[in-house]
Image (tube, rainbow, N blue to C red; front, side, top):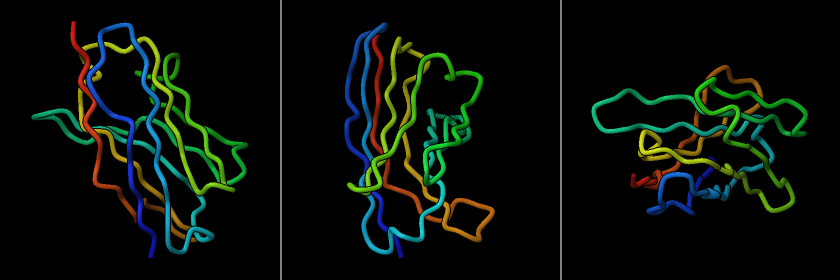
Length: 119
């Protein structure tokens, strides 16, 4: 089992920045991909970004690829999502997720952290 705990959310003005963190515990050696999703009220959960174990492969949704940067520090078992040029439409609950080796889907999810962008 793997546990994920996000932090770093909060209230920020439009144009501002935030960095979300996701600390993994448990069987962290089994994690291959870490990712970030978000869910706004009344909307479906949306993929934002993912990163492989080595950090050599990253993927982004078109809506955030020029503004968000995903990274991870395996020594600290921590993933990050740096968000720049935030917009009110970025307001959502942001979730960290992990996909173990041998799995095609994300298996582990954090509890989420709220990001609110004011205009």
